[in-house]
Image 1 (tube, rainbow, N blue to C red):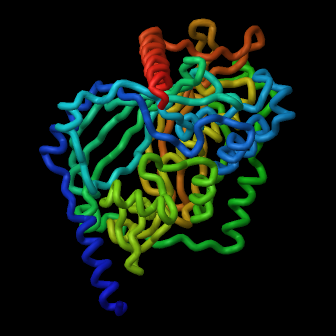
Image 2 (cartoon, one colour; image 1 turned 180 degrees about the horizontal axis):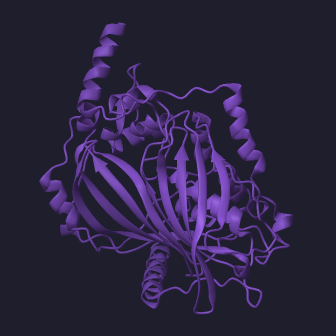
Image 3 (cartoon, rainbow, N blue to C red; image 1 turned 135 degrees about the horizontal axis):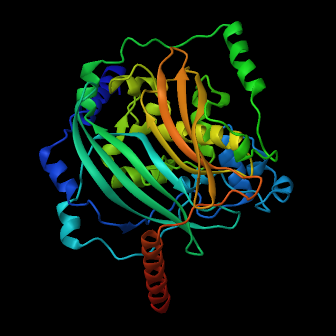
Length: 433
């Protein structure tokens, strides 16, 4: 086939990929799913935590805290073992058996938002329990809210919040993640050209040296207790660098366990099967080869085709960077109770992010010694790309940092889902499945 024919085929494929629209019908059908919890049947790359995959996930986020990476060190901590960065709950999942969606509801909500681009734009985690090597994580999820807003970038967008409840094989709630997702039309985003004037960042040796100075000054609090009594409102949390962003960073994040399930980049025959399952997720590249739409995180040509000047990171990468920053500050005996973040701008290839934060409040509540902090992530253009706030439990000189209590209604729902899983598993085994 000639180069001209390949180019024409690619053009047609890209035009087809950007032809999907946000329809009123899809929006109204999506509202039917609000409040419906479903067992999560996705098999993530990681189903059970191990010392190795905990270390690999941490390293994939640039996190070298020995609490996550060194088993001998972990044995000396209050936990008696390495523990995962608790946000790793977002990439661990074993299929949970549960009752299927009501057939009528399933039929009415089939093929929602087909071909529409989805941005993860932040979210809120509440962390209840640590993840130890040997822990298997299950989950159920459901849509909580749906709003339609005007958008400078894409005409209008749909904003959805989904609640994922993560728990372990003992039926203990590990964390709850409320994911903020923004759905936009690829064709509209491509036409606006809002970000077209942003130029790739280049660096001199002196520029890199300044970034290296930040890296060299970063410290892991680790075993040195940070007592609640010693923390004052207005205290700085220090400074952390992330970047300049490279494709290698994205590759390492995937290698650490981020599978982008249920879409998932796959190879060979598996990719062929995936194309049959979710054809709109595959768009031809400049060589005429069908490839995943998510390659906008490493393929500049595809990123530009849908309205961005360059490839950019996953928002969840920066969520993990904020968590890394918080845990470096609070130390092994502290506990990040809650993290809320808003992804406000793209983090393009070549961009450098600097994280800063300060203590804005402290209080004693139910025997827990808590501090509230505000965090900002700012790029080399002086733009704030992430705004976050968090609550951290610290040890006191009179008591250790206590983990938060799980709300009784949430625990009851987890117990119900876990019991149903056991019933269905037993029935499956009796059938010889």
